Length: 137
Length: 385
Image (cartoon, rainbow over all chains, first blue to last red):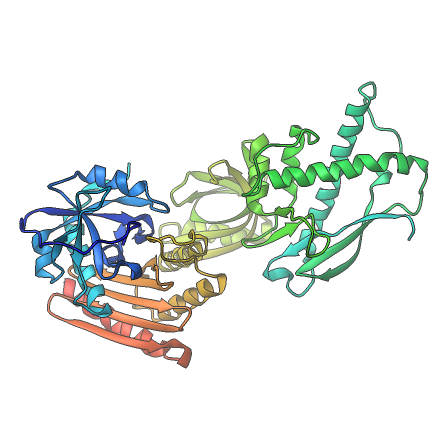
C-alpha cells in the first residue's frame, strides 16, 4: 500500500457520513467511465484500499498529494462514505501515515478475489453516482 | 575491393526484420541517411574554408554507399563506401569530412535519445535537423535502427520514430509521419484535384488528396457519414502535439460502422498498454508485451463476434491482465483476461445476484466465454430496464 511501510490499521471510523476520498488513476478511466479496479486493492495492497478522510483533508489536497508520488497520474478524486464501506463489509479504518494524517483504509481482507472485485464495483457505482469530488484540471 | 572505405552497418531492429531481411520501403531511409551525411560534410568543408561557397568537384564522390549484403541480427544492412571506380588523392583528402559528418549525425541522434543530453553537437548544422524527417518515416512502433552497429560491443546509436520526431520538431513546427485516423467524411472537392475533408474524433477537420481508384469509397463514406466513419491509413503531417494537420497520402481506406469504430478504439487502447511505465500502479504493474496485447485484442474480437455484445470498457490491471467491463445501472460484468495463463475470470453482479466463472482460453473455451458474456449482457440490460 502506497510507498511507505504499511502500519497496521487502527480503529473503525465512526462518523458514518464522513466521506472517504479515493484518487482514480488515469489508467482506470475509459471514455469517462471508471473501472471497478479504482476501488479494488492492488496486489501489493494486502487487501487494504487507501482513502483520505474528508474530516482531515480536502479532495483537492488529496489529489495534489497523490501526484507527488512516482508514476501517479490521477484523473481526479471520487468519494464513498464510511457507511457505504460498512454496508459492503469493507469497513473503514484509521491508518494515518507520516506524510498524510488523513490516510485511512477500507478493509477488504475478509474477502476472496472474486468478492473483492464485486465489492469494488459496487463502491465504484456509489462513487460515480456522487460524481467527482475533485476532477483533474 | 581495396578501395572500399570503412563499413557502415545500420542494424534494423524489430519483428519485421527478424528474418534478416529489410523491406524495400525502408531503403529510401538509407539513401536519406547518406544524403544527410553528405550535406553535413559539405557544411564542414565550407566552415573549414569560409572563402569557398561551394565544395570542389568530385567532393560527393568520396562518399558513395553501396548495399553489399543483409546480415543477421535482426537485419544488418552491410554497406561500404564504394569509391573503387575513381579512387584518387582527392578522395583521400575529402574522406575525413565524411567521417566527421557521420560522427556528427550519430552524436545528434544520441543527443535526442532518452539517455541523451538534448544538445546538438557543434559539427551538426541546425538547419539540417529537418532532414531527419526522411529517415525512419516508415519505422513502426517497437522498431529502431542502430546506426552505430559494428558488432555486439559497439556503441549504440539507436534511432526510433520518437528520436526522429524530437530532432525534426527541434527545427520545425511540423513533421511527416504515418497516419491511422478515423473520422466522418465531411466534404469532397474535385477542383483542381480530387480531395476530401474528414472530421477526426476529438480533432479538427483535416483534408487530403485521394486517388481516383478510391473515389467510390470516399463517396460512400460521405453519403453514409451519419452512421459510418472512414479509417484512413497512409501518411500525413503532424504538429508538435502529435495532431494530424493534413493528409499527404490516403493509402488504405476502410468504411466502419459505429460498433467497428468502438472496437478499433478499444483495440488501440489495449495496444497503448504496451507503453505503460514499469511499476505503474503503486509500485506494481508492468507494460503489456506486444504478444500479450495482440492476444488480448484477439480475445476481445472473439467475444465481439457475437453481435449482441456491445464493446466493453477496457482497462489495464496491475496483475498483467486486461479488464473488459460492461456496465448497467447497479450492475456490472467484469472479465479479466490473463495473457500469461491464457485464462479469463468472469464476475458479474446486480442488485440481488452475482455470478463467477473461469475459462481456460488456452483449452479453446473462447466459445463458452462468448456465450457467457452474451447471456450476462442480456441480464444486465434487463436489469437496467
